[in-house]
Image (cartoon, rainbow, N blue to C red; front, side):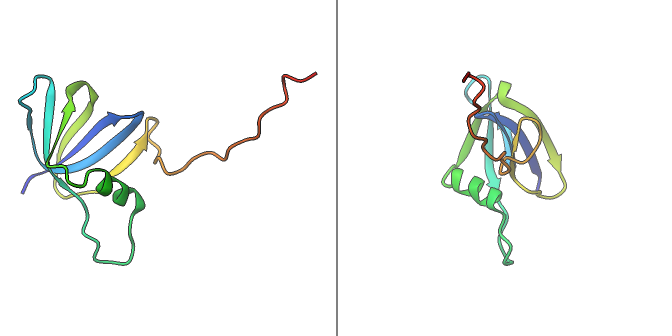
Length: 107
């Protein structure tokens, strides 16, 4: 079985998904991704990022991505972790603590 890791831009984030089939879509300028792979949970540890992606793409039979959104397609030996990264490469579930508004405009 061939496994592909697809990295693409979506809503200001970088998504990395694993799939079994990638082809040129019937729509011009799109890549078709089929048979998305998600981890089977046989242990107590559950990855919240993977669960978020699994719920976001539940029921999706094929995903059509515009070519300009694709960063990279790699054929890999085994399925890795699906994840959502910030554009700078950091994992998106880490957010800075909100700071109170500054009083710089007051005299």
